Length: 168
Image (cartoon, rainbow, N blue to C red; front, top):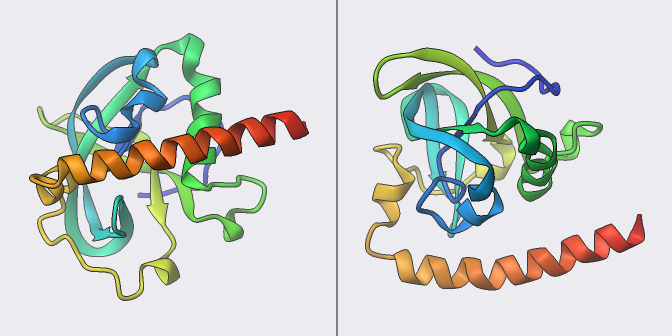
């Protein structure tokens, strides 16, 4: 069901702040060719605070979106998402999230492979489980608080990104 990350061009399954309508959609909205509701089986969703973490195994279902990107944006967005998720393909054991290939089911029943970011089990200890597996539903009613937090974080993220770019 899952395999190690490579650079194969696959759509992305997102389940948290990267979904269209969530605070981090701005990271890639201009490059989205198409998106649709989708889900992944045998995964669990945890509340990290202002974003979720998905873990593999132990049953469950996580709901999100399948995102297809325009070809001309793909490589750049892949690097940006890996950076945002704290995924280092050269040192995956040191990563916050791992980018893996997984089987996804769209809302119309199509099954296909997509990239998704899964959390590291040890980082999810003592985090609350989102039993219904739907981040957007989980935060409904707290949108303004979360959007404010992400606005602050995005400015820090942008400053950090500029620092990293200037060091190269």
